[in-house]
Each structure stands twice: as C-alpha cells, then as structure tokens.
Image (cartoon, rainbow, N blue to C red; front, side, top):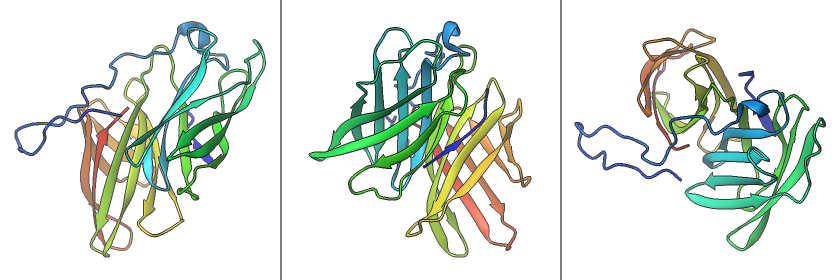
Amino acid sequence: MATTVLFSACKKSDDSSPNNVYKCTTCITKPEALSANDATSKGIYKGVLIGSTGTIKFNVANDSSTITATMVIDGSTVLLTSSVALISGQPYSAPFVGTLNGQTVTINFTVDVNGGNPIISSANIPGHPNAIFTLVKELSNALIECFVGTYNSTLPETGTFNIVLSRPLGKFGGIARADGSTKNSDVSGTIDANGIMTDNKGIKVSLSGDVISGTFQDSNGSTITVNGKRTL
C-alpha cells in the first residue's frame, strides 16, 4: 500500500560531536526531474517507507527510456527494474523486480497520465511483510527530499517517523509507526520560511539543513521527541 502526498544510501558525516552538524553528503541539491516531464507520467518519484525503514526512488524514463528504481530498506540497497515500456500519453503501471538477500522483491507502481497519484499498490518484500510507502513526484522546480527518523514518547513508546518534503512548495508528508505495531499514522503539513514544520493538528517541529527535530506534547499529554535525517 502507499500513501500519496499531493505536492502537484546516504553517506553520513561524523556527528558524534554536538558542533559537527549532520550533512547528507550524497544527497542532491537540485531536482533531477526534467521540465518536459512535469505534467506527464515520465519523471522522478521519491518516497519513504515504514515496515522497517527506508526510502525509494523511481526513474520512469526521466531522461532516457530507462525505467528503474532504488530502494534502501534497513540499510540494504535493492535495485529494481521494470520490463514494461512507457507509452507516451498513457498512465504507467508496472511491477518493479529486484533481489534482497537472495529473495525476489516485487513492487507494483502506478501513476496517472499527468504524473498525478503515484502509488505503490502492493509490495512483496521478503522479511518486511507490512511495508507501507509515501510517494511523491518530483518537479523540475521543486526538489523532493526524504528523511528517515525515530520518535520516543514518555508514554513510553518508541517508533519510526519518516518524512518526504519539498522546501520550494512548503509542504511535507509522511508516516509514523510505533515499534512492534502494524498501525500507521499519516502526517502532513506546511513548512514556513524559517523551517518550522506545522502539521494539520498544529504540532510544530524544526527543519534545519538536513535535520528534522522537535519536542511536543500530544493530545494525551505525553511528551514526544522526534529526530530525522535526510538520506535521499
């Protein structure tokens, strides 16, 4: 399954010192998506996943006829390919197939003819049976960034908190899941010029460079701390 956010493996620096700010040195700073593909099914699609944790990027004939995807899940990189050709002026739907630990991975991707509603309709990832995705189309004027992170609560509770965002569009979305659970919480909201991320419940966290962080109280009075780092 996938959550669509309607916006229409990273090398870590040594951050053991509080004065050494984390920077994703392999993350790009400009969109890969071409302007000719902004309103078509061609292009770059990026997202985050939970059910484990990680990111995924699809290249659907963005700058050639190549159609591939790269998924990073729990630190393992899976290269996926599709044998289904894209037909100009048509929606695109295809299985992407790769290998993880010697076993076949299949991820079924679909997107509308205008690049809207990109989703992963189903996924078979051995060892990760409850994976869920949030997926977004990158635009030529709006870089998409992916952050993977964790949260902890005084409930007590710990979990995964992964975000996909666009600073030029001032929007973000993502998913959270408590450790040991199969239930997900969708999150979405806006980003202001000062890097303050505000979700649809009014909760605020901070975006600074390649780091998301914040502490707040939930509706039950529990204190929650979130920390995330850009990896794509």
